[in-house]
Length: 406
Image 1: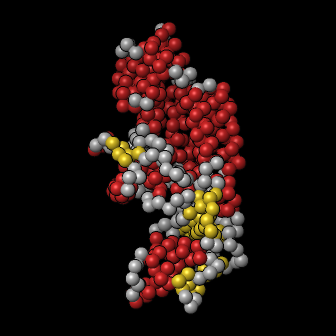
Image 2: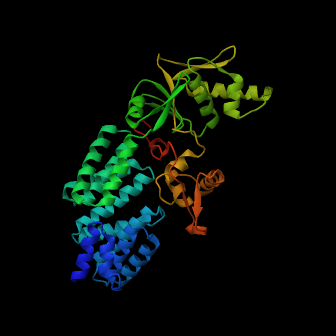
């Protein structure tokens, strides 16, 4: 490897893409194309970067399997950053195996981290945790060690484990300082905001207040009966009752929980559950039916009793009943929570992350766009969606993946 290629590689490792380009910008040999591609990716020109890396991979000979594998890993990272979740994961797995077989353990670990980050993004936390456990962070260089701890931090936050999240963040900050890469340090500091930003609202006895991550963790570990409007479940300690597929029952449960310990008028319940402006006898009959269904669902946790004015929710065992709601009640808040990471998403990638149909996600995006809450650029398969940072968003509780008690 010649001196210019070596110097460019060192510049990229130090987070200096412009310094790397000064050395190889006019060269078209395969190693230079690969380095140019990585530099363009660091500068944010992902389309150009992808093209350069593919040209580099084609340019390496049959005996340069390691170099080709590194190009595949770099392209996989670009796919992840550009939220191309349909990128073939088998190629990355094959590249990682090739790197491990030939002793390139650092880049093999980087490939494994990309796999874990993708699993984390789509909410497959158990698989991400198992894959991360196969990596020894002590053997990694500082930059990759910081990335490793950031993934640990992300898993801990998604599982509502505040103490492990703080410990991982501290290790990430220390590794980023050792790496001395400005962009990496900024990424760590950006991640730390998760611990100091409101995650949700607690609605209890007619009052609402914001909750931090550790407060949400404490709430869900308590004996409080929680109607969770972030995950559309009712939970108490280790018992979780999912109602995400039964929106009418959940709307009734939330309305009754917000009214606790008082009862809630029938007209209020009709408006919340059925959005009925004018209730007739058919609405009242349907309300009685749905209340009966809710009573059956909640039978181990609470009772729904009729009162003169409406209905009241009473816990089976003495405890508080509260509602855990997003920081702001927004339609399609789960889509907004994913878009709030600042990256450009395709509707198909959002559908993969949310485990939903592409058509359902597209309808949500169209409604959000009509309200000027998201905007798109590009056309056809290249169309991407973004949103500016929104007050009180995102919240980890709206992202895909189960919580520890689910």
